[in-house]
Length: 114
Image (cartoon, rainbow, N blue to C red; front, side, top):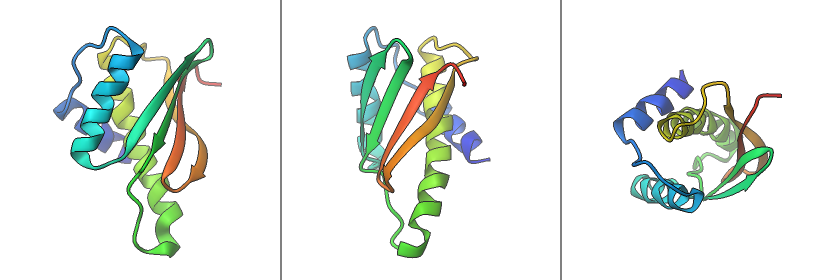
């Protein structure tokens, strides 16, 4: 359900076609700034794209911060999937959370599922 929410957001707020990874990063950061949802750095490698998303909104309730982070990440997975498919990304590629540095600092990967 949360991934579908992100997909709907991506449909409602699409990105223009970006000719470079740097321009894609700039467009995503502009959208995230408008939502007050932090910022990303994209790292391209042979294995795929890595998205380090920092400054995620955090729950004010300390006891639910991790749960909130996981729920918010699911929304972001749907959002980024929609945006990347809009850039010509293949439907067989997966956008998924790879690592949690903290509840406001998460790494996602866009690559072949393992």
